[in-house]
Length: 287
Image (cartoon, rainbow, N blue to C red; front, side, top):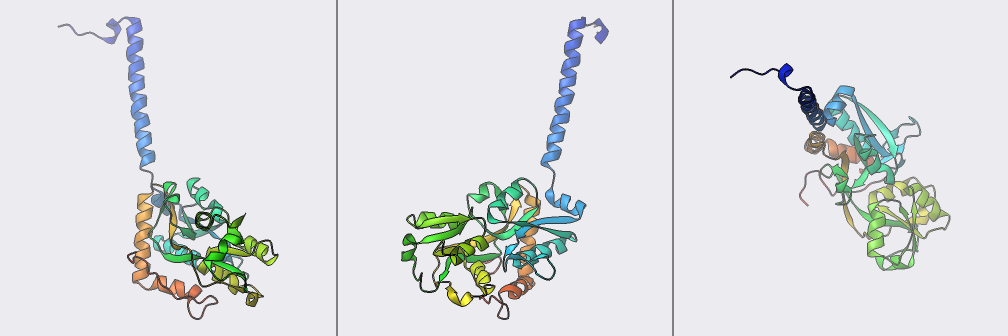
């Protein structure tokens, strides 16, 4: 059989042949590019840039706040972030956040991790991934002395909450008759309490203890001895970054096994700290 060459094919068919070849090559290149993007790894990027970008609170002691001497953000969450950076051998860069911005900072890729008293929930897990828990707390209240003593009173009170937090959601669900006023962050809610705009504010118990420890007239306030929830706190991780999550989880377990997690806790909640609180949760313990 005689061979046929491209030159033997009619002109219009040659154009079809060339176009099909071009589309085939373009499709192959596109698939290769998509595969490359899919295989992109945030953990590798952090190692290459030499910087771990973490979002933490800047006004919520002892989890995250600005130290008056160094003018740097410090606190329990920052210490855990520093331990992760040290394990990687990279520089830690801390960006300030408030409760409502934690998820957006991760989904917009502005930070690699969020360590900001971040309660693990099913709803949030639809948008971001979480590490294993490294802290546990319960939702409590801060009020002027004599105002609040039991959860049964909550439905009749005007209560300040942090906008976009689990605390706000839980309170609305469990006490629908309570009048809630949402603020950008806990210090703003406390200012409203001090000015009489609300009768109580709510947050995680350890966070309220840290707040009260730094109030000059703390003898006028109290944290009633009841909680309306039990929450596990995790590190926020961009969705789908499995290598980064594995690294974070493994490092947290190492910190616990080596006693470093306890040491970090003791700095901020130990017997000699401004906010003494017994440590009831250990990283890796079964729930």
